[in-house]
Length: 187
Image (cartoon, rainbow, N blue to C red; front, side, top):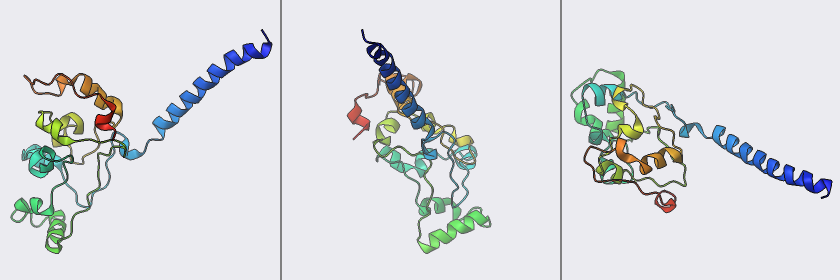
C-alpha cells in the first residue's frame, strides 16, 4: 500500500468529522437571540403576567383566544385590555398610554417573544385542545413580570414531547404520541 493511501484513509474521515463538528458548533452558537431561552424584548407598554395571570388568575385564553381556533394564539386587541382598563388603574402611566392607543385606533406593536424558524409550521390548536397547558412550552408565565422565552425553540424539545407526551398531558388523556413525520412541522 502506498504511503499516500494510508494517509488518505486517515485524513479524509478525520477531516470530514472536523468539518461536521465545526458546522454543528457554529450553528449552535450562531443562532439568533430570538430562538434562545431567556429572550425578552422590550415591550411598548409594560405588562405583568404575574399580576394578570397570577394574582388575578385571568385565564390565558381570555387574552390569547386564538389558541383554540387558530394556528397562532395571538396577542389581545387593545379592546380586550380596555374591557377592564376603562374602569381600573386609570391613573397609571402605562394605562394612560394604553388608552391613547385605544382612542387613536392604533394597534400596540408588541414584540414577539416566541419565534420559530421560518421553515417550521406550528399550530396551537391540537396542543391546547389536547389539554396541554400553556406553561409546558411558555413556562410559568403567571409568575413572570416580564415574559421571556422559557423553552429553546430547537427541534429536539418538540420531538421529546411528541415521543413521550405523558408529562404534558392531563391525566386520563387518550393521546399516546404526537406526530413525528417531518411534513407535520416542516412545510
